[in-house]
Amino acid sequence: MDAIHGGLQQPILQEIGTAKAIDLSALNIKSVIVHRVPSCNASTSPECSNQPLALDTQAIAALQARITEAVGRTSNCVEMGITDSSESSTASQIANILSQKTIPTFVSVSSSLAYRLHQVQNLPTIPGGIMLAVQGRTGISQDEFVALIKAEVHDGFSFMNPTNIEFLSNLFLTQQQRLYKIGFFVRKEAIHPPSPDNFNVYVYDHNITKSGTDGAAKYFYLSFLGCAPIMNAKQLTEKFYNTTKDFITNVASFSPEKKVDLFNALHVYLKTDQSALINPEEFSGRYFPTPEIRDQYSSLLETINFPSTAIPKDITGIARRLRLRSIKFNSGVKITFPSSSDANKNRDMVEIEKYDVNSNMSYLRVQGEVSEQK
Image 1 (tube, rainbow, N blue to C red):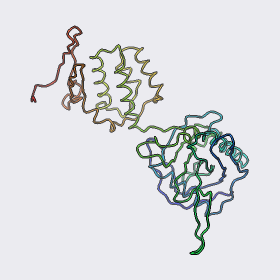
Image 2: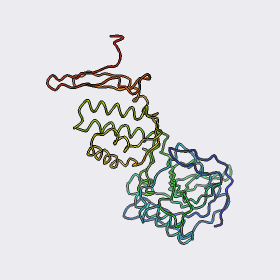
Image 3: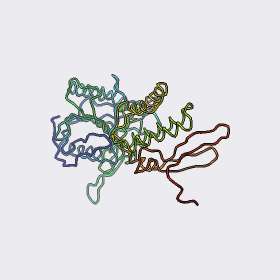
Image 4: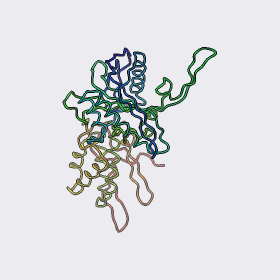
């Protein structure tokens, strides 16, 4: 099928986290193929097409509209990172489509992807549906893309005239229906052959919200597409803060005084350090006392898949927690205080001078004089 240029003038997708904006102003759809993919059980298998569709201009325009509306709606589309780039992965299969650029390859690879989708639809709650594979180029930038669309089917009526309507079954991708999911793979660079890691991936799911991807179908983005959500700077900063705070709390060899010092250091590092980046290795080397502790910290970050490189700092999600510090004692006493003063940011407002094991007493040094008692 010849490339057809749509004239849809839609806004460019804004950045999501660290996402690169994609130009959807005029998609150029080259080929479309459709496979029926039922839910996975012992008696079902996909029904695969052996050739691309021959769509007319109106059908192409409607498909472009569905993709543009879905991927361009920032509340329901997020950039994700590729977690599976193995030879059998979806990303590798898509790289094959863009490498070979032939109809037989498009047919055979999309059929294998239909079987992959069928295999992961292995729960009774996952409905079957239609899988569309679409290849073409984006708008002005003309980046190559392959989109995989899982659409559920439904029934409806077609209006013929006031005395005649027609019942239609197996409808999908209608204008009002949102029961579909899209994996939109955009080639980053024109290297040859295409690499499975050389894609920006955008995932649409009507269950994705502005606050996160918890409602999204993992069988689709994780098991089928081989992707996972990318945290933005705000989320990564909060994860660094929480993980480091918990690590300091749980190191048995740290004394109460040392833990207070490290919590102060964490607050200073995030709040008053002028760097726009967070580097866990730098923090560890600067504040953790021994190579063994630093190795434990690095292993923890690796376990939770935290980036090993520097990340952009955005403390807006933890600003309130950085403004106030608190110390709680096993006697039930709790002290809350500002984490630093504007006049002397490098001086701790509260210091634990020592803890006497015999008397079970902690001795504090507090900056300032008593101004009020209640």
